[in-house]
Amino acid sequence: MSAPFLLAVCRRPGAIADDELAVLDQQADLAPGRGLDVINLLDDDCPDPQTLDLSAWAGVIITGSPLSLTGPLSADPAHERLRERVLSLSARLVQEDVPTLGLCFGLQSIVLALGGSLRDDVGEELQAPVMTLTPAGAADPLTAALAPSFRAYVGHSQSVTDLPAGGLVLATGERCPIQMGRWGRNVYGTQFHPEITTTGMRVRIDAYGDAYYPAHERAAVIERCDAADVRPANRIITDFVQRYRAAAPS
View 1: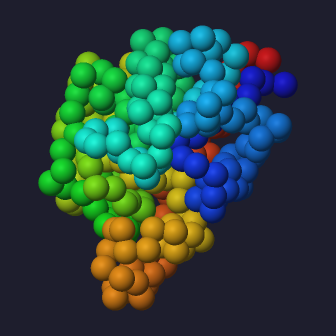
View 2: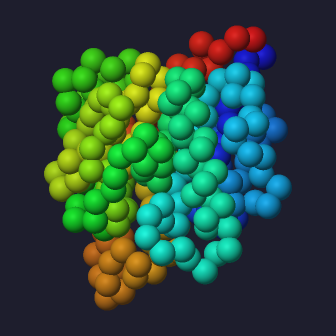
């Protein structure tokens, strides 16, 4: 049996966290106790990322989060602990070139851990804009099978300014210019959400209320999100796991 994957969760338990696990099971045949180990970086008893034996896992996935990596702390007393842990983990993953997929907050944490910055002027409401592969993305082993342009769900107030430490931009967006990147051979991050299916976007619309859109626009948000075919983006989850599951030692 190949090594399991590690899911580094960056949010509290709830409907969205449950949906993330369900999609990993549906798209990549990963579930807790069956090919997936889970740690929550907000938990009191979460291990220090510097003590983890990263060679024990075929790859690492860092989830999204409603909490910010910059600016004031939220009311959650574990917010600062999350920041410290995810930045520490991200730095190690890049340094050791561990197969990694950072999702939105995960991409941002990699960028900040490497000395980069975030910007506030190209955030995106809940929708599915067009992503376009760069020449590097068209040649990358993980994304080469994608069409040159594809739709993917987004929802973020901050975005990465650039990719420090030699990062390559793999996909750009209509509004947000950096939608996917890679460091080394194996560390990937997406600003968009390949882990969100059409069903999962409904979960987020319900959970976030008017955080990403005015409350009176809810019906229009549902309509535009339901109309988008994001299955090609969802395949990134499948292809990431299959690629590194096959490469992992038994």
